[in-house]
Length: 124
Image 1 (cartoon, rainbow, N blue to C red):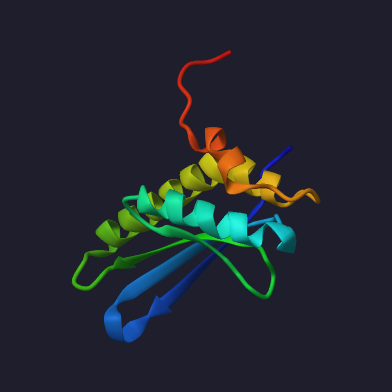
Image 2 (tube, one colour):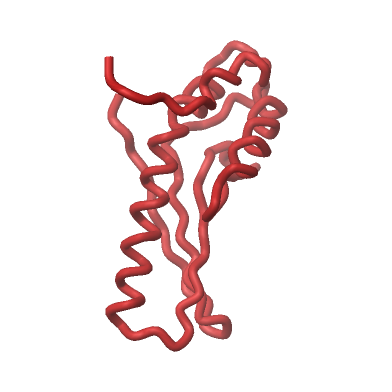
């Protein structure tokens, strides 16, 4: 399946901060919301930058992060934005399969997704 994301930027003038979000094209099954919440705690506790959340109104997961840009040159700011997008897309691809599982009709227990959280190495 091809990945489709909706990207958005919001500028907060008084803090010179840029909020960046990357929304999945996935809707979490409401029956799996408790499992999703437990998994978000696990995933977010291991991230250095940004966090995942699930919007209550759409049940769509997203990755969000904020960057402070006060006093930076235009080039440095553009480099930061480029890094934010790269980090977000990397994290979204890394965890997409978990959100796809949580979108299914069957109820998923958080324990059953423990293996899905593991990082893999190598190629098959």
